[in-house]
Image 1 (spheres, helix red, strand yellow):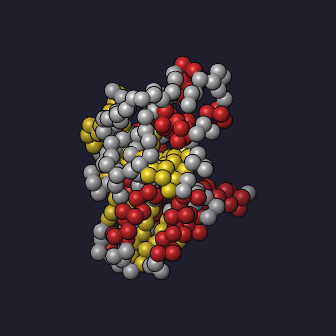
Image 2 (tube, rainbow, N blue to C red):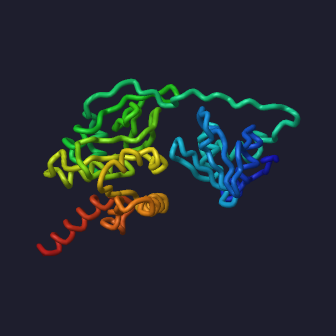
Image 3 (tube, rainbow, N blue to C red):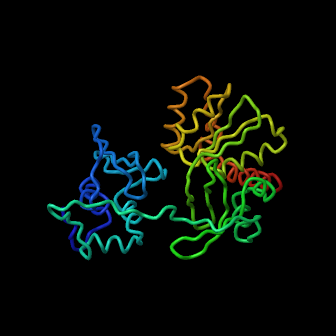
Length: 300
């Protein structure tokens, strides 16, 4: 397989066969089930294959990272390059032809890619402004989050850090969304028989703000930090008598909620609350704007 096409368009690059592309890079599937090709992840070190390519859809998903997409998404991640640089590679400046008769070894990539240098109280104006824009009060964020200094590609950055149960961090700032290793779920055990489940921590913080007057021990909480960790969270969730799901309203979140409902009648899908929005935080932000708009109209 050769990607030496002059003037390769974006659409052409996206639709290049992922299985052939991975083979050209020296990665072969460990198992094939119908249209699903399973690999040891080319993006990190692992012993159990969790990187899947659906050949019919021509899309990949790394269950360990909780990320996926098309060939361009993968190429940028794999080669650590920009979108333009990748198109340049695919257009002819770099051949992905697989050498004949040569056994290619997987290249070990350093883990973690993000190195956390330290965590501190939230004080950065930029981060506080970001929280304000997400309608999350600083006192709520300070209770559950820290300001993180981290290193990436030799440069130091900062962001809002939300810790998981294995000591890794979910990291957010106005321009960047990432995780440090090890990636895991985050749980809060308050001795309740009810578990409330969120996909991301900004939704959890939003919920805490809107229910700030509830007794702390009235609910336990699970933040998946990625829908791909739903199975990992089941043992904790299903210890409870009731499990309320506040997952995103995209296809992935809704499919996960549907599957949960099929597993047990303990689960309820609460996302109908924000059915016209992408997630709980988006609903909170925009419902607040709507209320202000209605108030202004009344005052006219």
